[in-house]
Length: 574
Image 1 (tube, rainbow, N blue to C red):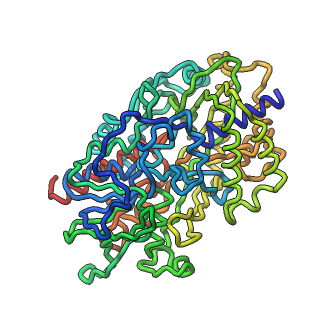
Image 2 (spheres, rainbow, N blue to C red):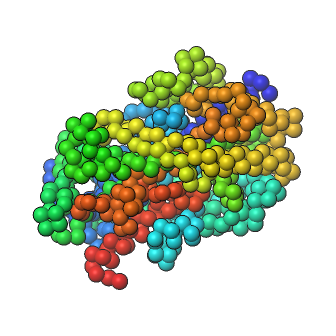
């Protein structure tokens, strides 16, 4: 239970927690309108310019193209170029790639937690664990969305990219364990969000191929849409609208892969707009780079202030994740998130299992660790040199591991704890500084503790017993987790017997960060940026809390939903 078990845990954490599994839709759509930005003319004119072809930007663009001329500028590449690159067999290769063209751009929050932002057409749906679950009816009402339009928009997404998962032995055991310990009732297979235990949707089809938000571009009118890849927007252009008495967005400057600058302008129609859909990190970052943000902060970076807006970048939040890894005495299936326990105390319980890898992956994991632990100015005080060397030694010792077991995790609702985002440089390719303040609010910590107690109960349940080594108590799993450098935070001796300290010391991201451009603060209820004309932000940066158990369903829905609303307003339809 010593050295071999430590090997197992490090391997499983690396592949199943830090880096959600990848797959691929092998029947790639043949989009004639998706091209490299190097082929773009120096000057372009469109009715709508969408910055970001991600989880929200793709459905938004597809919808708007049904009634207007649309340009999408995506800073990453295409998920369809090389099927093997994002196949489940090679996901470590993809995630260990630290080149400018990689799909996952790694960053470390100021909290000492390793994270990643997507840099690819389709956004996070190309990198995530594939779970699909709608927001609750209450969340939809509180967001001010039209319930009928929201429901129809979810269905529009689901027709193209969502499937029912197979639910094999490991997932079924966790599902039955949740029911046994009282996470009731059982709601069966459903996309809807209800208290109890359910099986949700997945964006993996029965052959295991991934379907992403990029697939939603199949809905687009190819005559009215252009998508440029490796098009990095430098800033949004503004001029003064004398009639409105405020700045008005009228174009963007973007750079292609060769470093050549291009300018895209809005055509001269009163209802044309630029729409930021660059995600919770990219959208507030680009607003600041364009001159909308806290005046003192912008001036310190030499940026001309267009609008002093101190709330840009505020309210950043990331749902904390805490886990236990469970080795199994028998083989398990390879599975991502399929079942979820939605508790009344505010924690969501999910699970994943399986995976086997060959010899070379340990070296790649070491490369990832060294890359992220040496990011300028962000980690130097969080991990002492001897700890870094210990982790490196552990990774180097992992050769040809056979992973047999799974992970059970909890994510808290909300969260209530929030932080902020600031620029580090004026280069849009660079990650900004992000602070999430995990567990700053004691209510978040309470939910984490209750979630960990539920995980422990599930592991000890009769339904889960065949996947347990009975001579390995849960206390051993907790103790060994605390000896692993799962993040760059300080570790405390009392974490072995205090679930509060365990939550704080072993917190991970579940990649559900949001905030930075919230309604009533940065945008209005129609997602128009307050204080300027012809500019909206439509993506997860507008969320006050993460919707449902997993946000991707609602982020895709929001793109379709707002595309429909914008077109109805444009053409005067009710």
